[in-house]
Image 1: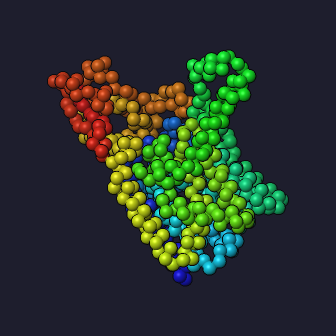
Image 2: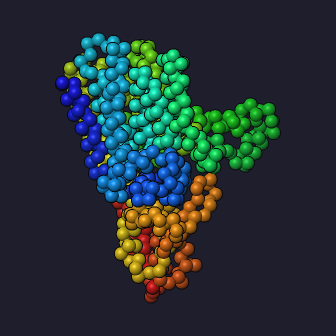
Image 3: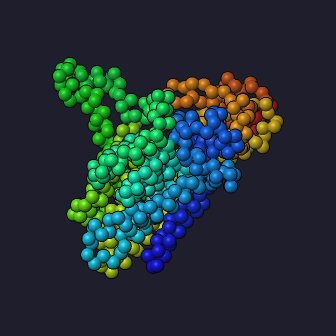
Length: 533
C-alpha cells in the first residue's frame, strides 16, 4: 500500500509539472502545434483535414507529411475545451504523465536481476521519480510534440514485448510509425535489438509481425510522396561546395588517390554523422545547454538532466554493466541506438529526435539513486541537492524561459491576429509577412476558420524545398514579404511586417494609420501593423 501511495504521489507531481500554465508555458505557439490543433478541429467539424482529405493517416501539412495519430488524439480535447493552445498541448501532457507509470512498470522487470544488496530504495519508484522531474521529459510534455506520444507508445510496446504480449507489442510498435517520423528508424532498430537479446521463439512472432506490417502499409505507401522532404532533413543532402572541394584538391596537388582515401565526400559525411552522434552523449548536451542548435527545444542555461545526476548516472552505469543480464543489455542498446535518427539529420544536435534517450537515462539514474540510498547521510544530502536543482530548473523554465527564448516560439502571432481582427472590417486586404514562417495557420487556428471556407478560398504554390508548398492567399489575406516601397500605394490594405519591412522613417503618409506593434517578451521588435486608407 505504501508503495502504491508513493507511486501515486510521483505521478501526481509529474502531472502537475506538465499541466501547470500549459497554455502559456512555453509562451507562444509554433506553427507545427497550430497545424496539429487546426487539423484536429477540421476533422472534428468535417471529417477531413485542412486539405479536404477524408480521415487521412498521413497529413499533408506545410514543411512535412505528418503521421497523424497525434492529431486524432487531439480531437477529444478540442471537442471538450475548444480550439486553443491548452487543448492542443493537453494530449502530450497526458502522454508524459502516463510515461511515468510505464517506466515504473518497465523497471519492475529488473529489480531482482540487479541484485543490489541492502538497497533501501525501490528502483522502480526511483526511476519513476527521476522521470517525473526530468527536464527533458517535462519540456517535451508541455508542447504538442508527436515525439512525446511516440515515446510513450515505444516504451509501452517494449514493456508488452518483455511480458511476451507480442500481438499488443506489435500493435503499439506499429502505432509509433503513425505518430512520429523519427520512429521510422528508431522503432525497427529497437525491435531488432529486442529479438536479438531476448531470442523469442520465431513462430510466436510470425503473426504479430504480420500485424505490424499491416499497420505500416499506409506509411510505406506515403514514402514516395515524402521523398523530397526527407532529402531536406537528411545530413547526406548537404554536401560541400565545389569551391571547398577544389581547395582540398589543390592543397593535395591534384592527387586523386589522396583525395579519395582521406577527403572524399563519403568520408566527410561520415565524420559529420559521428560528430552529430557524439554530440548527443556530450556533457554539454546532457547537463549544460541541451539542444544548443535550436533554443526552442531546451531551457536556457540548463541541460536535459539535472547536474546531480552526473553522480547517479555514473554509479548506475557501473551497476548495469556489472549485472550483465538481458535487461541491462537492452537498456545499453537503447541508449546507443536512440541518437541515431538525430545523427543522420541535418541538425548538429536535436533534443526532439533523440528524445528516446531519456528512458534508459532515467532508469540508469534511478539505479544509481538506489545505490546512494544505502547510506542515510548521503541519501539526505543528495535528495536536498536534487531538490535544489529541480527548483532552479523550474525557475528557469517558468520565469526566465519566456524572456530568453520566446521569439523562437513565435510569440507575436496571437496578439497580431487580435489586432487585425479589431481593424479588418475597415480594409479590403491584409498583406501579412511570411518571414517568420507560415502565418496562415495561425489565422486559421486563432480565428477558428471553417475548414470549408479555407478549402474554397486558399491558394497554394509550390516551393523549392521539397515539401507540400505554401499558402500565398486566403480570403482577404495575402502571405508574402512586405515590399513597402513597391506596395505603399496599395490603399484599403493592412500591412503586417517587421521593423525592417516597415521602417519608421517611411511611415509618413497622410493616409497611413499605425494600428499597433507587438513585441517579444524581452522587448525586442516582433511585428507592426499599419493601415493605408
